[in-house]
Length: 239
Image 1 (cartoon, helix red, strand yellow):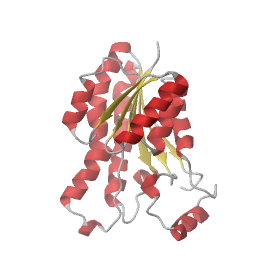
Image 2: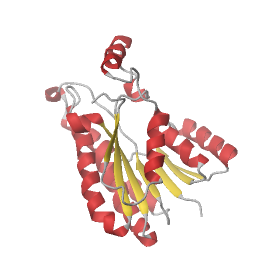
Image 3: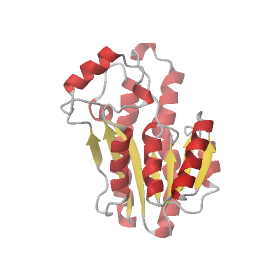
Image 4: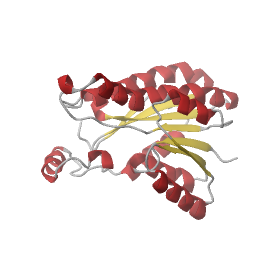
């Protein structure tokens, strides 16, 4: 039986690259995004055409618990959950509004709780499963001007380690990928000068690609269940 894989933030970047690799593996996909509806529909059609994979699409805010609950009411089996959806905020903390802070936490961190709490019973039924959370090196080290983003990713790291211990006896793995600077739309706001300065600090002398992160995600989904509770840093040797 094909694996069923749910990916949030699937219309672009890391989520889109993950969907591509899992489709090649023959998985049935459940893909979620908020805004890029046309792009996701086109992408899903291309996956079905090329790989014969089944794609179920949902459009909404992963930071809304009711939206997530509605999705899971329509799912009766899940093998892999990839919590990829995320947003950033750059600015001084004292200028950030409480609503902006809460929005970051809802999308980046609370969504992991909303999806995991509904995915776990499905995985318990089959005595296996993989939950893979997309984190950041800033969750390990923190970044000036990105306090909320750093805090949300640090929360994901703690969430991952704690939940892995809780679910290990049930053969459900929970891991996270702490990404360095990846060439995605989230980093398009950086100027060419800023990018050049960052690249000089990275031993690999370049940004990472979504395909590289997707490859790590796929490897974690295929790993034995003794590999759990890990925060895998993928940053070109930067940190």
